[in-house]
Every structure is written in C-alpha cells, then in structure tokens.
Length: 322
Image (cartoon, rainbow, N blue to C red; front, side, top):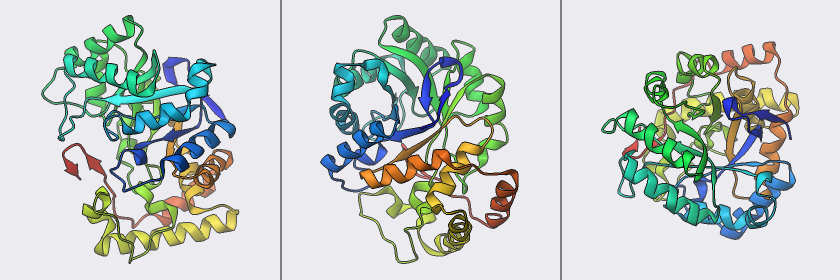
C-alpha cells in the first residue's frame, strides 16, 4: 500500500483510508461482523488510516471501529491513525461550540476505546459559532493531549482562512468525485498553498461509480439516497450512461470502474488520500488495489471527455439531502 505524508501533520498514512460512514445506519442495515472482518482485512492490506465520525450512528460506527482495531489500540497504537469528526447534533443541524465539541471528543474517546484521537475534524462549518471559539476549543484539546491534530470537513477556502487565523487547519475532508468537482476552483489551490492534507470522501459518488446501479435500483427507507434526486429519474439515467462509458474505458485498462474512479481522485493535484467504505473484505481488497493504478495525462484527458455531460451529484448534510 502506497503511503503519503498528510500535509503539515507529518503523519505517514496509506493513500487509501477506510471510511466507516456505512456503519452508522444512514446507509441501510449492515452485518457488523462482516464489517469488522473488512476493517481487519484493510490492516492486512497495509491500510493504516481509518476515518469515522460521532454522527455516524452517534457512537455506533466508532464502537465498531474500536472493536475491530482492539489489538492495535491495546498494543502498537502508533501502527494506526484514527480520525473522527464532531459538531453534528443527533436531531440534525450543527454545533461547533466549545462545549459541544469537548463533549463530542470525550464521547468519541470512550466509543473508540483510545486515550488520544490522532485527527479530530469539525464535521461541518457552523455559521452560528465563530471560528475563534471553534478553533480555540480544539487547540485546548490538543494542549490537553486528547487530540493530536486538527482538521475540518466540508469547509470552503474562506472558512478555512477564518479558522487558520486562530490555529492552523492541518487537514481538510471534502467531497470529491467525478460527478462533484467544485473544490477544484478555490479549495484545492488553497490547501496546496497552505500544505493542508486533503482526505477526499465519497470518491465513488455514494455508490454511483461502483457500476452496480441501474435504472431500477432502489434503496432502503433508512438510506439517505432514497430521498436524493441524484439517484432517481432522468438524473440517474444520464449519469448511468456516463458510468457505462467509464466502465468500458476501465475494462480496457484491466480494472473496474470503481478502481478507475478512486485512482482518478488520487491522481488529482493536492489530494493526499481517498476515503473508501467497505462492508466486506472483497470490497476493500478491490478498493485498495486502486492505489496502484497509474493514470497518464492522456487517460485523465479522456476521462474528462467521457464525463463532460454528467450531472453534478451532491450528497447529504446534517439538515437533509442537497
């Protein structure tokens, strides 16, 4: 597994991070034992970076991850890098206040079964709380040894600059995939300029780029995609046509469309890590192999042509579906 230094943190992490949003219940039901086997398979494949969040089932995902990594946590703690996020309310909405973030860190420490969180990220920018309060609170938690490094998620360049006026933004976790490229205009140039580690989430467009969907695909009621226009009607049909073109291109390269999509994200300037989720060992083996796929400038240009008529695909927020 290839590794990279994550921005100014100095952390050496695998270019594939194991994401655990699928273990919180917002993506339908899952087999917990199967998920634990997938996490342990990831370790055997050389993946040392694991990302979760308080909001993924409000403790559920963190507990599963902690259980799966129990041996590493109890033994060689430095062998794994654990990232989590806070600042989302159980009833929906955001709270990046000092009190709520501190409460979230304490809960995450207990759920994960660790003494220190390697990377703690503000899950969503909170317009009702100043950057001074949010950044200051996290710096206090760093000083106390409860977290090592501080990042943000879903922030734009202006929001990162406001945060950085108080303490450095060390990582950013943005959504990024072939159907959602908005960060290329301002966000990625900002992170490159300021040596901010970028962990791209949803590289498979919430499953759309797996190649497993068709026009008849449906989702459990508990799955947020059941309420998203991106996964129904004409938008889905149009993007499925793009996915099929990409799949044909990938097949000629001897890879899957999923691997192509992940490799594309990793090939983008300024992106350090792609976060991928998996419910089974087979899923994570396939995704991990994408880190070894090399895309030439010609490949990237052709991929741009193949996706030129795609419809932008957004995602879920604490308040609902975009």
